[in-house]
Length: 359
Image 1 (cartoon, rainbow, N blue to C red):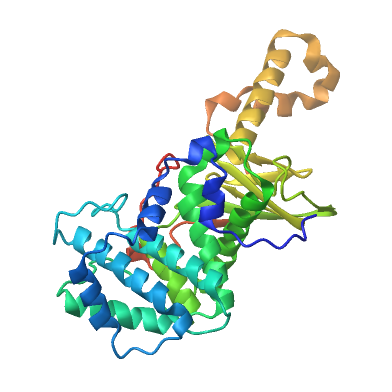
Image 2 (cartoon, rainbow, N blue to C red):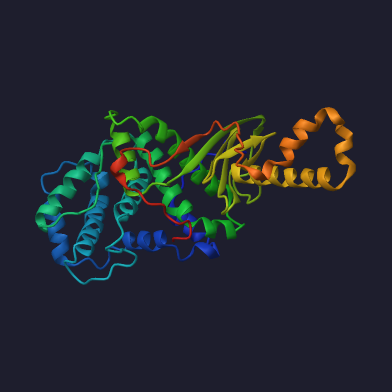
C-alpha cells in the first residue's frame, strides 16, 4: 500500500543495477565522495586544523572529516590548484555544491538522531578550510542551518533534480524501476512545486528559503507549467512493483509531461501550457492542433459536400465567416489556470534551460 514508509539512499538505489542508470554523472560523483581511502596526509592535516575548536556531536565526527575531504576536492579542482583527477568532479560544473549537499544531507539523515542543528558547523568548517588552503569556492555554496524536516524536504528536491530530472531519457527507457523509488522522486517534485510558492517572496528570510533560492540560482527548470487536479478515487500503489507508479513520464518531449499521484491529488508538470479535459491532460499546442484539424475537416465538408445544407440558409453568415478563417489570424483561447514558472526569484539569475538529456 502507499502508506509504506521508505528512506531513500542512493547506495540502495544503485545496487538495483538498473542498466540505463549505471553511468549517470551523479553516480560517479557520489562514488567519489564515498572514496576516502586515498586522501593525502597533507589534506588530512588541513581538515584537522579546520575542525579544531568547532563544537560538534561525536556522532558526526567521521562525517565531518569526509565532508572536509570532499569539499577540498571540489575547491582544488575548481580553482586549478592541483592536477589530481577526482572521478566525476568537473571544474566547470557549477552544480558541484549541489552534489555535495545531497551527499551530506543523506548522510546526516542516515546517522541521526533527528533535530540536531549541525548545519552551522558545516558552514563554519567550510569557511575555515578555505582559509587553510587560501582559496574559496567561486560559486554559490552556503550550508544553512536547517532542521531535520527541512533537510528531508530539500534532499528530496535535490534527488528529483539531480538524479531523476537530469536523466529523464534514461528513466523513460527503463521500465523496471520500482515504485518506492519513483515515489521518492515524486515527493521531491511536489516539494519543488510547494517551495516555489513558499519562497517566491524575496523578503522571506527563512533559512529553508535561502537554501531553496540558492538552488534556483544554480539550477532552475526554466519555462515550466504546473497544474493540480483532484480525483474522486484515492490512488494506491505497491512499493516493490514497477507498474502504475506514482511518478510517471507521460511524454518525454514535444511536450514534456510528468505526473505525480498522491492519494486524491495529481500534480502535472509540462514545458508547455496544459489543459485538463475530463481528467485527461493535453498541451495547448496539442489542443490547437486538434482544433485546426477539426476545422480543416469541417471546411472540406462545407466546400465540397452537401454538409452545409444541414444548417439551412439562416446559418449563411456564420458559414461565410468560417470559410474565410484562413484569410486572417485567429487566436484560440483556452481556460488555462495553471501556475506558469519562468525563472522564479530575482530577474538577474540568468538561469539557462538544461536539456533533459544531460547525465
